[in-house]
Image (cartoon, rainbow, N blue to C red):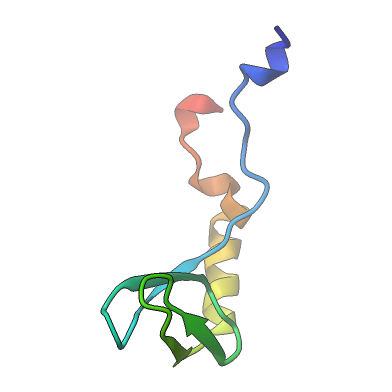
Length: 78
């Protein structure tokens, strides 16, 4: 067996997920931080609805503070 398959893999990036409640059924719909006004579709009831975008500066700040995910990993695995 290849030893590389048993080694833990470090993240190469980070995304921020926002949860938007479907106005029709209330299900929380996960979206990768939409940076522009967009339409979402509920996977439960199929309703479509507009969502408020995330703030670009806030998303960039989070990614910078966590070094694009590298600063948020468990140090016991490094």
